[in-house]
Length: 611
Image 1 (cartoon, rainbow, N blue to C red):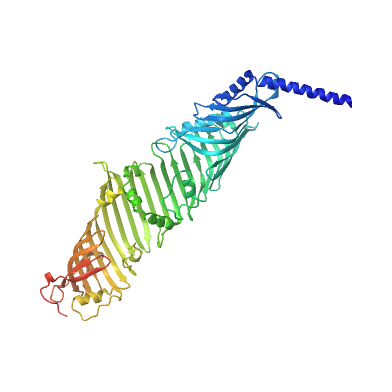
Image 2 (image 1 turned 90 degrees about the horizontal axis):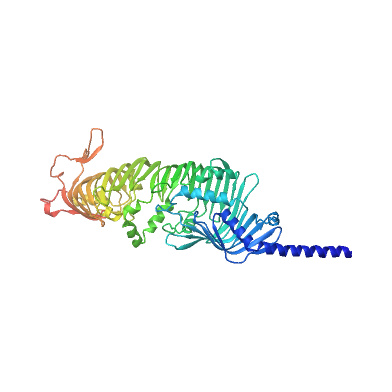
């Protein structure tokens, strides 16, 4: 027993002397220089250690470097004030070499450059992908662990912004060549966790293929990629992808942006499908999209190459309900100052950020109480030239076509705007009539209107707008008004006027030339079952004040709107030969569009009409 105890004491003494000698060897300036050289070669960065090196003996000798600064001039990143634990291979120390087996970085600040260019995206996404691929190849030489680090970005003016805190990751490569990356970070009130697995690290060296699986998850959003990495230096991925957010508005706000209003729009969203991702583009040959309860499918392309980002796609929806978005847009107009600022924003800036070629179709389009469809919408924006076409749209048996264009003015710095709207037997009750106006309970509206304007912003464009319109309504019915009783009273009838009786108009036509301030009616004609009212004059905007002069007469059998050879109404009337009974009463139409007042024009009355 004494011999065993003595042997143990001698062994402990030898180990203590060996550790002291090893510590003196390792913490010497020569080994420190070797470790700094290995770190510099491994990370491709200059290394500066501000505190003395310390050695601890765990399963392997661990060299601890404090107050470490790393500077990677090529990649543009740096690390400041970190602590680095370097696991050394014991066999290397015995032979006098500092062989690194793994490295752990804790604390400190990782500073990244601002990679954004003038177009709001990466200045050179291809070069960035190539640089990241090279850095990853370098890091895979040794297992790497990072913990408790802060991620900071510096803009060209030198201002710093904290991107994330408590950054942690573990990067390792197996003997078979597979690469695994796990980690997490805290950004604001969100914790993001990620895992990535690459089946063969050889693809990082150049052309080749390797299976890639990426999962990112936070309380607000998730992202999953499952497919093949074709070229790491080009970030070229092909396979399945899925992005989902439970609150898109909240997610966007956490990136420093905002949606107008505070409604239910821009809530849950999901984009899934298959396609390719490169350093500068996302191309989905099959895309399934869900947002705010709407589901659609088609194809989608987002290309960040070139001077402006480009969005292209074709999406089809069964039901596209935009009620929440329309309600939010209308509610947002309550801020008059914000609305005025938006209207005065230069179109040169509004139309500059991107190019768009988007085609949408829906079997049914819903906005609040209005439901139409099927419909198709085309949006084309190229080099600040915007075209919007709404066609193939059915509204309860009627049709609607809209085309609008906004393009740079070749003769000046502003923009030229033009819009054409064609209506074909649209149910009158479905028209967007203001609350103060009477709502038709029956009837259809057809016609065509064209408008043009010029200006540097929407406010100037709308102010300068002018155009023409030819509108025709058939079979109009209102629940009140008693039009025929009121008109009969003007012609001397004993019939008692009753505004609570229904009003009927078999045919109404209006032909006008308008501007932002007035509408000049060259012809307006209304046929009730018993009367015909024709007038012309002016409507003042935006009050809708009427200043019309015309003639009121009884309607006789066969008296109606003139028709073309195919039976279509021309808007003019076929009047019987004038007589004392049919010449009619000169009248003035005053009041407003929604509350007209018809009175005799005493300046033109030669004799009192017979009863």
